Amino acid sequence: MLGIYFSGTGNSRYALETFLRHYNSSAKTVAIEDKSAAKLIGQHQELVFSYPVQYSNIPKMLKDFIEQNSRLWNGKRIFVIATMALFSGDGAGILARHLQRYGAHITGGLHLKMPDSISDVKALKRPLEQNKLTVKKAERKIICAAKHMKHGKPPQEGIGLLPHFAGLFGQRLYFMGKMKRYSNKLKVDPAKCIGCGRCAALCPMCSIRMEKGKAKAGDRCTMCYRCVNSCPKQAITLLGKKVVAQGTTETYLAP
Image (tube, rainbow, N blue to C red; front, side):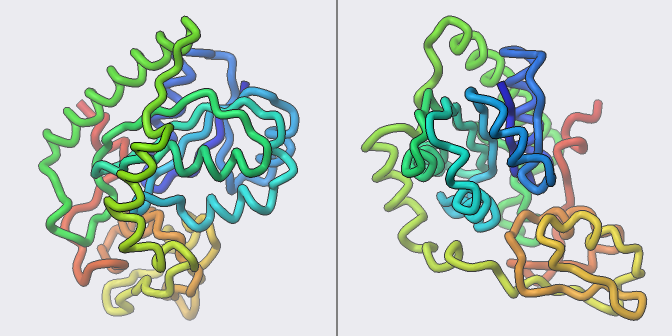
């Protein structure tokens, strides 16, 4: 068994690692941006895929990865974990259907509410203690799902016709255009940037580069929010104009 993940601020990675720890502790995990990912996928028949839903849709980088490696999915047995801040309807289902196009067999799906990573939109932010409780609740749900999986009864959240319609009419139809291409809206405030290079090192798309001691945003942002949440000077924004509160999964796991 192999666990595969795409994770922005750590939610999907944490969910995957927790699930595998309780279901199959010997399983390896790999991020899709890892150069060894495709090779490892080819060596395993049973996979667990974990990813964050964006506007009830698949992040552009993840969709490209699946399509570029389309030959790898045929005959694979795949369980899908979808992390989300808001209800997505068919978070697991939309990735499942995409994989099925290439011959994958979907064994089930799990939806997990996790702390929101969009740190520059005030309406979506929650207090630290509430986020910690959200992660604890998700952990209990993951452990329960792993237990059912061991007994041959994997959860089926997001799988089927009704969740499909919920996801489609809930957000996806309204924001479909946002997910067709990479974003060019990432902004770096040069007055705040101290040139530490952390954002460039974290970007899974290598879309941020350092120029004359300052970070410069490119036009291939997959909206993972790693850079926005990790900038020590809050110099980076994407959807909003000002960083409200930064956080990663490690923040909410701290005592």
